[in-house]
Image (cartoon, rainbow, N blue to C red; front, side, top):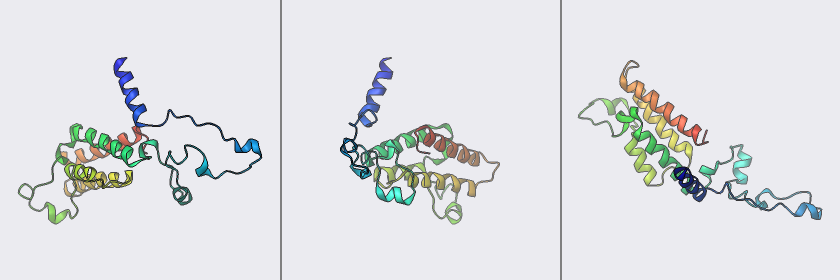
Length: 171
């Protein structure tokens, strides 16, 4: 129970889902339209006119600020690094170990690169982060035979990351 309470307190400190805004009084005064950005909580939830007009889905709470997105991506990366099948991706492929790798794979990616980019604030969207994770797995599948343990690891890591995105409401 204490652990659950600590977790709930931590979530509450990082999110604003517990905020309740007062109703709109303008309608009682005869107003029939209100600018959506004038509604309390709409901006805080990540809504922008540009994203609305572009047809992009609204931001989730975990994407609503740079800090929340970074924390979410850090959580996903940490879980991925601990995932049992992530071992081939924890460090870059070394030319001494695989001499032709960089001839075949022109844009290498690994979890240490993704960690560096995350630390540097490179990932401004969840899509950029997922693109690097996908690149890492696709590179592995392109270089290694389908029957190899490396190929299997790539498939499993990709599934794991996608499951994390779903679990956290990012997909």
